Length: 394
Image 1 (spheres, rainbow, N blue to C red):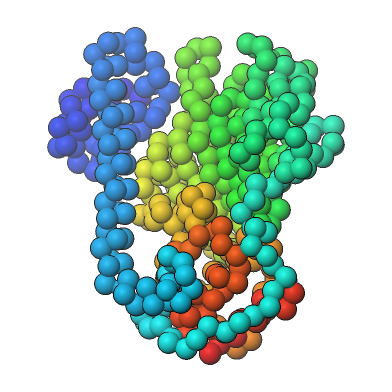
Image 2 (image 1 turned 120 degrees about the horizontal axis):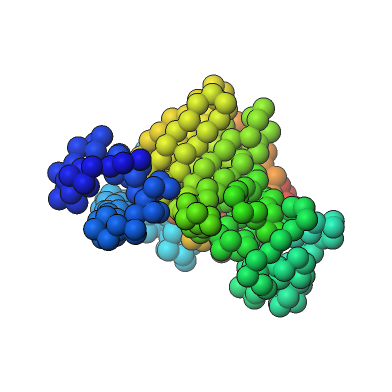
């Protein structure tokens, strides 16, 4: 792709229109741009573009945070009442903005604090061997074909090449699976990092071949993709193939070097891809959607069409940052997240339509604290029977 210098200069001056901005971003993340260092002037411009893109992302995230704080200021007094009762700095806001002043009800539960929030996962090697990572000692786990698998104490496993070039007679795949109430991080052999939310799995090659990088995801994952160049100096794409029982075929996400989140649980109505940095293209047999930082594509399972919208980045990556974050979410959507994280089943009694809540809650707290705050909104009541949560309308 040949991009006129004057378009780049307009972009750097902040004078580019929407189409010119798109062209600059397309060029910056294209294979052609990787060859730009051959031209010193063009290389310098590319560096300026990269800085501007990152500065714009940082300002966008900072603005979003400040706007959220301003929006919350008017309701914090109401929220504080519930927080004081519970002794924690968390809040839930009913869409109507009303809280109940009734005392919180006591409840018995077999779900204890500490059951959720642990780094738990099962690693399945190419030979079928299964390793429970949470009960395996830190240090080397396996060493095959020039790749050493190392577990560290902070809930991470890494694939580290032990020699410069790894040649495999055939591609060997590993799979990492997180259970409900678990999470884990894996660093792949190319340096890409992937964080898995609860009830998710990632299948990936032990070592990638020379011209392709592809992994398979189900559930939810956050990726920081490493940039890898071919011998010819071109960027090798990284592809996430998203598997979901609601889709006849896999959805594909193609990236070069970027940070993004994918939410693709079977029990959700759509698949959401949220871009924090870089550029991605989401594709299905019915169409494609290209994303720039701060945007989100949604593939609805009912019509299999993409919708692109401004992303709520804080909400999309809240799980990775140790939070639940809901924005006008329906109660059943909230309870699905609770069910996955605390490994409980949910039963509904009464009409749950039109109950939408917003709020923030730490994922390190126990399930009873979470449910107490839900009940404090005055919209629902709960009972705990073993590991089953019965939710009823007030």
